[in-house]
Image 1 (cartoon, rainbow, N blue to C red):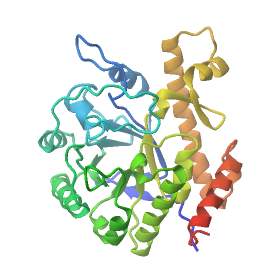
Image 2 (cartoon, rainbow, N blue to C red):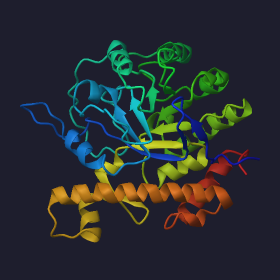
Image 3 (cartoon, one colour):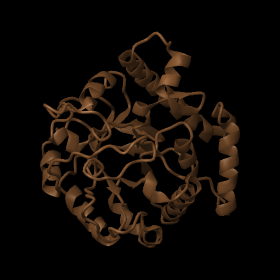
Image 4 (cartoon, one colour):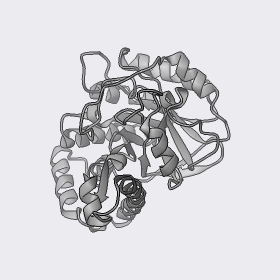
Length: 336
């Protein structure tokens, strides 16, 4: 029997190193307000404020940077920067933390645009480039692998994440059985990624599927981490960590306040933790800052868990996480 939660040390071609688990604050223009006259996204202001407080890792979109929805990144703001390929911004796909379904205002985006952007990324900023995906283009898993290999061959000075997507337009979930059957093909990459929503139809389904993929990777001695896109909160991030995931990103830290082991409506967070007399702009900025501190503490808890496998390190959620993990074990007899 085995335990799937773990920490992996990753060596970047630049010579820098970093360790998982990683809880990664994300930035995206999608789902945030923009000025109709100028087209300027609210995310530009948010990024300028929040980037002062982020140290270890962040995720930004090549689409947003290419179209100047974010200011150009000219220095290493964090130890590692994950550069997403822009598929999320140009799709009508919404992650599970979305509280409404905003209209998507997209500009041109293609593999050529992405390559142009990656070509101009400064070598001195350690990054993880993500493989291209576009909602109008679906490919077999093998074709996705070949396309990602071809793209990443251009960028040996950066790390690479292969983001696996559904094979057909009418499919909502990734091809789990095909991934397991072709797991040895993943050796070409540094990290393998999946969006939370496409891993299954419930939290337990997603936990089981992450565990299945991780077992197959372990059986093949493939030691790369799994990145779950769209999961960044005090509960599901830990549940997917227990199932074999190691890198987690999302926009919840911009939409909610983290308190008492939960992600809550930020006005309630303000009333309880900041004060009902503070204006909304201050509340948003303060909540973001405190959320980043919470993510750092949660990362420490996850790493501490690996030392003794003690659920009590997850203060406030220990019983829930233990019970959920026990339920996963009923579905997966290989877990100790």
